[in-house]
Image 1 (cartoon, rainbow, N blue to C red):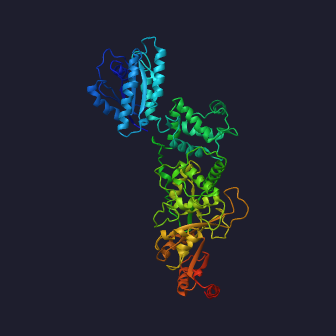
Image 2 (cartoon, rainbow, N blue to C red):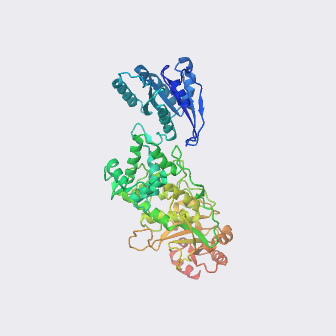
Image 3 (cartoon, rainbow, N blue to C red):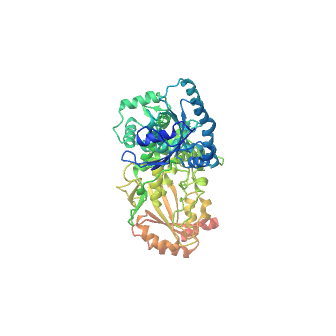
Length: 595
């Protein structure tokens, strides 16, 4: 929010511009004022920390260049007309507003980014022209949608503060980031921001805001007495008219929340939508400032690794299931993030998978980095910016060794991300709506489960594995093959540590919650030159080591056995003979038995 605001008063000569400014500054009507008052700086006070600069203006053509410069720097332009001389109102339409719009257009500015207020002056003088004035004002508002508000004033008797308070309101709580004045609808950015906030307060992940959740929203965002059940009932009945699009099972839908925001904007109550946004550090351009404590700083012990907390898993699971259900029933009303839309031909299942993720990521800022750019290459590897387009979105079975439920694949990506980049995971969780949940911020520590051992602190659904072996035996290719990402083999060099994932131990029964019987295998290929150090740092946190060797190369097998000596004694290990497809079929079984 701005801490300094510049206001400009504009209009014909003799309409009371200087008198209005003088009265506002001194709280007293002046006996005489100069034709143009010098710029006035008003410091902030305890009630309002915003400092204000008020600029007067001349309507003379010789002063036009000075006026143009003032228009460019003003945050809000107050256009005045004399209610006793309606030709000054017509001049707003014929002279001053066209001038404002031409200057903004010439400077390649969005004309809606400048707040404009219209106010009459000299309302203390009774003139019988109210019907004509009302008609002209209505036409002005129709012709110039950039006008944010209209009001009446008299420097002698009334509403002087209202004019400047309106101007401050539309600068400190700007309309244009929230509302498209030409379509009469909320902007895409605003829709995405309020979707983020809707998810934050949907504590039970049912895609609705119950009375308790709405009361929590009110308490958190407005910091006053909680809204009552009766008041919520009135909102549903009067503002939302109990429309099933807005109210479902006596709870408010996302579209219902948007309707409440829209009505606040239409009633010029801009403080309401902005207080909600600023509770979660949204800036005036609707970019979001993330909390400093989202970066994972805990130093891991050698036998620990990071996993998603149970609440984060439940949030992600329900988020995805809700997105799929809304898509299947055509209930998505938010523009999806087009950056994550695959343009190639997709099956119906693939299209739903694609659009569900695009909808979930709709809340990300347009400048945010690709959320999956660091998957599946994390350590010492370059980001794969095209991965989300080619693999994550294009096929629901892209990253698994078999075709499973798409929600399981969605969860697999998050499990891999949580293990190898907890900071990015926390960052993404916050941005898609996992905010102010339990203090884990989505990531917790877990001891390794040693594969088949029973674990008392976590459910055995994330298995950490490493692939070791001599260079050239195909460790990276093995990871890609497990992950069904064979086309990515050329994206990494032999000295890179790469990670992939697949699903395993899945029952045939359909899973109905996050606590399914699906295990997520997160497997890392470690270059030979890094093996000793990597095992020192991570070996005790692994559940299993895969020792890879070439099936017809005894030296390769010997190298694998030497690497086995570096493993923790209680770490299960699995020898895997690779490149068997290069052997004649009749020799494969004999060579394997000899090995």
